[in-house]
Image (cartoon, rainbow, N blue to C red; front, side, top):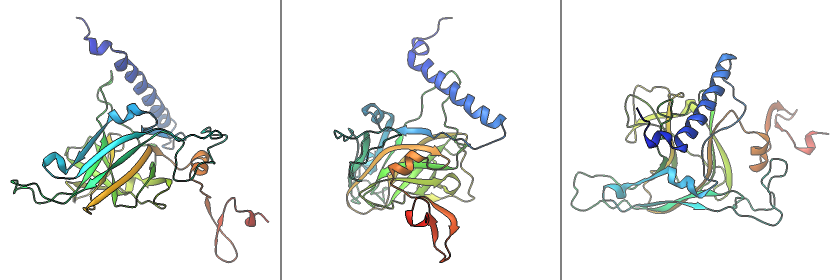
Length: 280
């Protein structure tokens, strides 16, 4: 028996090796009796133009509607003094710019119904998601995010009502687990953390009962959708999406955050670590 050319392709064995490394890390964590991983687990990153090809665009235009959606690669913004290393992150760029490549999800929403299709009673949505991952020697590739507590997203939002969509290898293929993507600073780059156990199971936009917990060991795809049905343009920039157990030092510097501790001052105010006035 001869192996097929696809099996001999470098990509297939490369993916298999990556999957073996990933499974080894997960197995080590479980053998040590812990679910806490220290390194971030990248699900998708838009640092290079080829990453756009790994995503799928959807909108009501697929069924004859008039909404339009695009996902474009935006090259990194650089300056003569900027750098993206952990030791010296870029600080010379305004918060609306990004020193890394990223994707721009943009277009326009229309709630106009397609003519001559009376069975379609609702329109006005747009979304993107990662494509199903390719097979490896271990079979179908799925993300195992069980050792992580959060889904993290590096985004710049226009403030519209976006939802994060997570698809798992569930019994019902059309089920999605969804969570509102809350932006604290529209128009600026920020990192958003969402607890995995706060996602809600839905089907075709309707909450499903009874609720079941997201299958953390069998995550298929991740994406973002806009379903506010407000006509007009939209724009959401995404740099990367990853599983995390909290923000590391680089993330905190990148997001210009100051961590709040559980301790309070004598006036009842939360102590903000790094605040000079609390050091005296």
